[in-house]
Image (cartoon, rainbow, N blue to C red; front, side, top):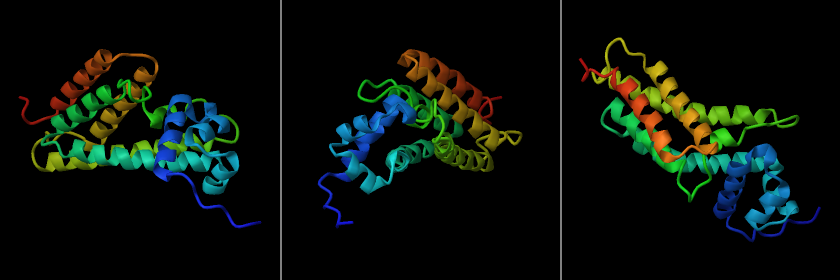
Length: 201
């Protein structure tokens, strides 16, 4: 084997392009030809850099997670549990219906219809979604300790509920639901979180 040629592409830009292909087509639907064309590389370069298609997906997910972590840090910085839910879910309604982005959520879309040989992909995506749920749970635990949530509230269940709503919104967006429809769902979910707040009588 000869020495590999120097990388002649910007890795982050290439991963952003791959991320969009996976986002639009899912792991199973994204072809090597689509991925290499979007990234501006040839198949041997893809395999040399990422090992295989699944390796590329994981690299793209790392990139997506990095970008999403910045946003989630802003979400959990909201002053109350209710505000956290509102900032997250209304933000999702905006982001997932933004024409500049593919509809829905990569962490949902990427694992749809995975077949033989790619059984691990849905679990990989679920693990990434669980990171967001863990961050919400920790924030709601703090909210309860601070007296923002009722003593009877269950921070873990509340985080799981908000996470489940966010996934459902992603499915709705990918199926063509508009921003108003997602905002309606978000509004009801925010009211459910607000019901657990000590600000409610």
